[in-house]
Amino acid sequence: MKRTISICGLLLLACFSMAQTLKVTVTNPMKVERKDVPVVVSLSDYGKVRSALVMLNGVEVPCQLDDLNGDNVMDELCFHANMDKKEKKEYVVTLEKTGKPRQYKERTFAELMLRNPKVTIKNKHDIFLHELTVERGVNPYSIVHHHGVAFESELIAMRIYFDHRQTVDLYGKNHKALEIKDTQFYPDETQLANGYGDDVLWCGTSFGLGAIRGWDGKNQTMLEDVEGRTQRIVSKGPLRAIVELVDDQWVPQPGMEPVDMTIRYTLYAGHRDCSVDVSFDRPVPDYLFATGLVNVEGSTEFTDHQGLRGCWGTAWAVSGKDTLTHQRETVGLGIRIPRKHIVSEQPANEVDYGYVVKTSTDQLHYDIVYCSDKENFGFHSSNDWFDYLKIWKKDVDTPVAITVTREE
Image (cartoon, rainbow, N blue to C red):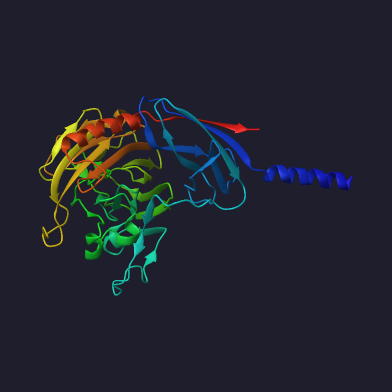
């Protein structure tokens, strides 16, 4: 009897530890070819996953596992699909309860760091952080390097100011490559001579590229009245960088009840666009918010009056118009907001192209995108950029269809 129980126990243990196999079917509904299409699979039904293997026709496909909430349980698997028009592909995914995530070529990167100002050699005695939280009244803008978390794909790189503005600032690249680990957003003369990129946008108090703010009925309001502020890196890569901003007990306007807000930015390899997911600690149907684009000096505006807006302009990217080490930079900016969130499209002013937005739930989503004229792989006129924005919106609005089935 004891032997029978032992054998049954071993069989149960073996079944529990067995890898799970999924079939993931990806279908492109569009009549166009699509590259580096993100495929995301929720792991909520598969227990604790430690490692994953994705195969397509017997060939291994790079993938990434992400713990999104910091509980040491992987929440999502992602990989990329290259799709011909109207194509369907079937991937075989093996989920394993043991081991570690497989390693692949890094195509994204993220960095949050403190620097010792007495040390001039890069990467010496720097403190690289996963997360930093400050309490009311503390401004870490001048304490953290590049003034806040930075993240990138091969095409673009951004940083988010760690202060009441939370502005998204931009770095332009000459060539497709990861650069922030080397330049840390501030290339030196040798790096510039070797073709590295640089800061390409002056933000000031503007939205920059799609910062979320409050709205008092006439003007945007900054994120000043908060009990605490956090920046964290959820994932550096290799296929997507995810960073979060948390504002605890934010009072958007005097007299309003405070709300906790988390803003998640997700940037995929091979992409110049970034998704922005804003969540609140409760539904906020009576709150108004604002977002939009900086009105780059002398810029030309584009809008379809349906949530897609862009601009193309040339301006100094630094204060003081330092012509010895910097030059005027030309950029194209874009934002796409689902119509259900739009209250109004605000007329352009000297600072911004703005929107007033709201949500009937505790979630708000939009997407941002940009290019730099210095790219040898991008866009070099307002007409080309605005044409791209139309294509981009259609691409975002028409995701691939993903079906997941468990293989017995």
